[in-house]
Length: 263
Image 1 (cartoon, rainbow, N blue to C red):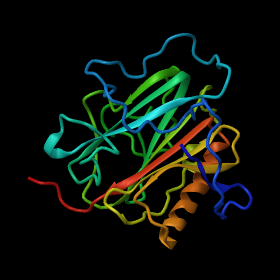
Image 2: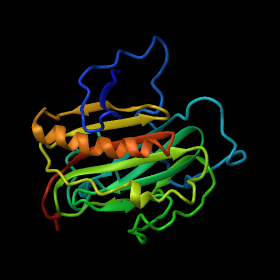
Image 3: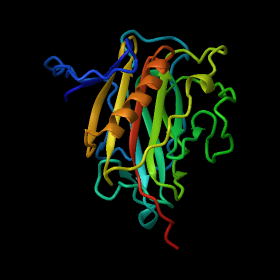
């Protein structure tokens, strides 16, 4: 898979157009978004944030893991679809999403939803089954480091509203708990909302620990216009900020069609 650099630190507003070469032979690019893993839809009854081994003991090597976003359309709520499967995009009112995070090492996970209206909504570990806490400035609950995290609990879903645009989910991970002095609300400023350009638009951005640039890890149905470049730059600046505090940063952005849910 090809990694395309999106943005570097100096200056942050500039876009790098040169592509990074293919990963060296035989080495799998860790931490990339896991689009569709056959047979790995979460099984009913699996635990939330299951752990093994002592928390807070960093493993050697880079932090590696996968994020899968499942969509449940209202007409087939019992059949979750990975984002790149037919029928998953665009998401619509009445649909819901669930997130499945799996690491190779134990890690502390923070999931945040930047919705298409510009709201910053904290998901894990603030909320477990319902969106009770909607202010990311509230300190996240302290949980054990985990190799597997489901958000929300299995069988649930974070529901989409009627307003259309581009939805964004952030995965932030590190092998030590978030320092009390780090205020996510100051780091995660709302990214201006952008309209949907293609019904199946899908893109994944990433920053690995210690990296000085944002990479485009996957892009589908995007186009190359001024609005796309502006949206990428604004989100890229946010991801670089977050990369100073997290070993793994991922942002998946996908299309949401405007319209009322079917009754």
